[in-house]
Image (cartoon, rainbow, N blue to C red; front, top):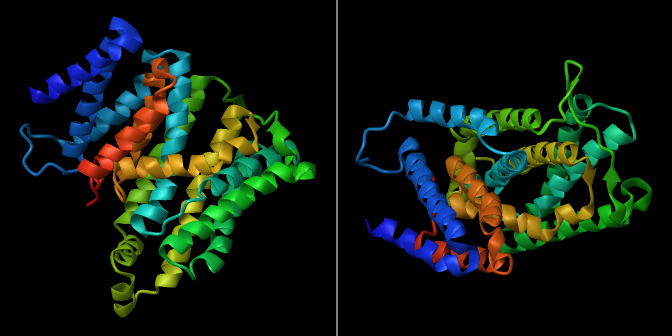
Length: 353
């Protein structure tokens, strides 16, 4: 009852800015968000004694089924936002491998995102490849970029590693912005073609949503399997205590290389999907703030938690749309929310296993 009253009070305070209708929408949105959080918590076993018995397989099926019917329930604009949410989920899964699983503070992950987007753009516009022909090369380029960064960066730890990765992200952005002969500089690359499947162009928003949703399901399944594998356990041991991991015979250097390359792989996929969806890429889309934004997603959802990554991505992509009437206060609301999270729930909304 107290939680419902708190939600109602938040909506009431918003009415001078959003009006009665906007406040009502906000109240419903907060209630739905809290309900999704509780269901996810039950689904992944984070509540020890649920008040209501929950069939996790049934809930998983229900969530996936709802995701599939979502385009039929919403307008094209919100389908477009849902596509963006899916792309950010894939990107955040890659960041979670590096930061959440392995404990490597990476503040330049937007660089891999940009490499993936520009690789796809150049291969499809300059070399005449289709999306599916360019995709393996795009993933290879971004994985190699992660591997190359690992050579100098993994000699460092903690804050020093964060500074190096931040510098790497800025170097890539400046290269994209100034290498006019290849990237066209600030003008970006346009006319990027849409993917084709069996000769059918996926240009309609609904069809593209299903394409990206398919990649999200594949990415979540693979990352979850890796998390529970020997490699995942090695990453977790490195995150908890690298010295103890070395004493147990784990080749920490090898597994750090694998984490950076595997994380960059998913960033490359997200970049390729972003480029083919927008049909245009420019350096402004891959700034330092983009890296911070994605790291905020996994901190909000829960470091190392796959359902937490999904929930954090949903909240931080949808929140600006919900707060659109608070145009001047959106970043303030985001900042206050993150401060409160760090104070009252530093482990994130859905804690790791």
